[in-house]
Amino acid sequence: MIKFSDLKLSPKVLKAVEETGYTSPTPIQEGAIPPALEGRDVLGIAQTGTGKTASFTLPMITALARGRARARMPRSLVLCPTRELAAQVAENFDTYAKHVKLTKALLIGGVSFKEQDQAIDRGVDVLIATPGRLLDHFERGKLLLTGVQIMVVDEADRMLDMGFIPDIEKIFSLTPFTRQTLFFSATMAPEIERITNTFLSNPVRIEVARQATASETITQELCMFKASRRDRAASEKRNLLRALIDREGDACTNAIIFCNRKTDVDITAKSLAKHGYDAAPIHGDLEQSKRTEVLDGFRAGTLRFLCASDVAARGLDIPNVSHVFNYDVPGHAEDYVHRIGRTGRAGRDGKAIMICEPRDEKNLDAVERLIDGKIPRVESPLPDKPARGRKKDDEEQQDVAPKRERKPKDEQSAKPRDDAEKKPQKDQKSAQEKSGRGQRGGRHDNKQTVGMGDHLPDFIAKSFAERRTG
Image (cartoon, rainbow, N blue to C red; front, side, top):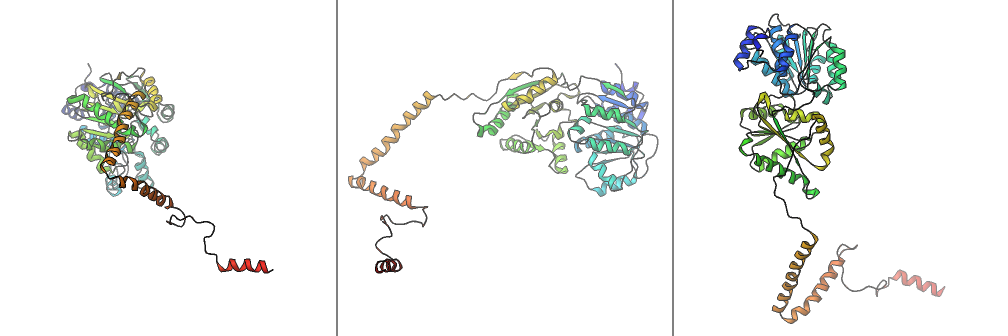
């Protein structure tokens, strides 16, 4: 078995790797690190959770150990689709470069421009950024990309889903033609293949797993759900989610619960918390400080359930996630693989459970075609409610009807006869009063008015008199 010491990494980088406890590289690391150290372009295709981040951070640190950064001109650039992934890549650089004097800057939204500008002005060896914030700095004249020696595009298929491809093409055009490019993706859509053909020069292609396959360490289950009534669908689905969590018992030490919509993320997290489950939401509309706080709590184990949109599905390395619950079937089949890839990482066992409504069956078919297999079905853990047929309903109505008839009969027998005779008159009067309410002119008496009544206005009487005399 090959070891990290066989990959020609610098001694300082090897020391940092050993301190993390890793001894043998993953297949993507074994395939990507040697050509990257030789300065060649690399196209890496591997499923999530296989160690792609170290595949480019380790050779970059080794290559950048010699040299010095200049103000506003970073020596390397790493592009990530989300703030969380960018922050995670920055943490990896801190881990593996602790014995090497390299500077880095993190350019993401939700953070002050002033602090980022100051870091760039000092000069950085490694610039880690999301595409939008990077172009903001460039357009403000605070950044030059002409000194980039190594450029990395991480989670390229997620970039495509989020609409970043035009930004990526623009950033490529701002960097030198002689740069080295390391391009990583879990899937290869036609649009991504077009970019690699345009901007990569004779890349070494490393594909360690069939595109969009789930890890074999993950046990997958599917629970079909059909609401009893349309207006109860949302609450009944949340009841099912809690029942599935309870069914797992102590084996569910923590879990990520994925929803398709941000509003459902908030509602599901609030519902779980209301029922005593330690849960919090994370999605793109939250403040960056709040997102960081929630993620840190989940990593530290102080938060048990993380309700997330797909912003958390790609690339986040949280190694000890025991379960993933897909509250919704994802709209894009590829997202299913990335979601469940949050569990079963680094050779550990994991479990992924998905809830499917009748309206989601088309998306389910797409998922099963992508993973080339049928997800095992499981019975709902909720107790079955007895069906209420017509015969049973009729019997219940018959049981209730006599009670309603006896009650007024008993009351009438206990009252004087006069009251019983007066009651219909009172009811008739109240009904007449009610019938007058809401009519034009407001409430009026019960006297029947014929024509214009007994009174005839003078001007009408006068006109009749004139006609007669005329």
